[in-house]
Image (cartoon, rainbow, N blue to C red; front, side, top):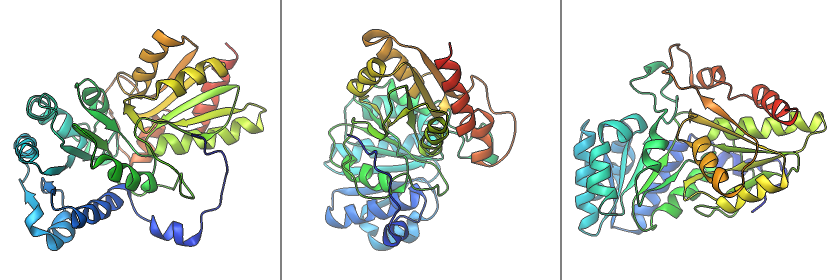
Length: 325
């Protein structure tokens, strides 16, 4: 689908989504659970769910404490009993400490557990590499049966959570931490596995996933337009199943592809796009994201990913270098 029209958000739209992705997720989850008693909220002492979800639906809430491996196993048991568990933890722990339980108890049995992981990428910021999640998308993509998604903003978060609730099999949804600017200024159709064309273009394609990367891609589109370069911008909110048709079309209709993500350039969005295009439509490509190293400096989330080139300026320079190759 294409979303090329630029709009100014209505005040009521901005007010409705004036929150972080995780705040909108929690609101949406509660609304879903109020309509369907099979939906459970499994917590790991994340803070805040006890005053929202538990206060409203104590019979559908379980706090396992800071015990992520046990959290995943209990979720698998709930799903086996016909429940629809939403697991709440941090991305670094879901994809490392609890990975064996995610693999064996959930993915191997193809159970409908929804793992909603916050603090994706470098969103944990000052907490350092122990809490950074620069490998989670690669780890989850590698698991058979797993659907893997990450929204561009609060609007897409609500749509993604609603769509994920009744998907067959396990789902991994990666969220950030703090509120970011809205990408979507009006309603649109969301579909799992179908990329959204945020801006049209025929010179190059920028493929982005996650809040800051998508915002950087849209801003780069504007800078490139001022230079006479039209850049197609694809929001690849679903990394698995990947929208291969949109990628093949982009490879054939533009002169190259630049990926941008808040994740290691190995195994995440860039890796997934490279795997697909190498087999189906080889083209010039560049990957922008976290280098193959642990983050050795401190700062807020925006500062950290900017230091790895997730900025409109670096994207613009990368596109120009690719086109001038």
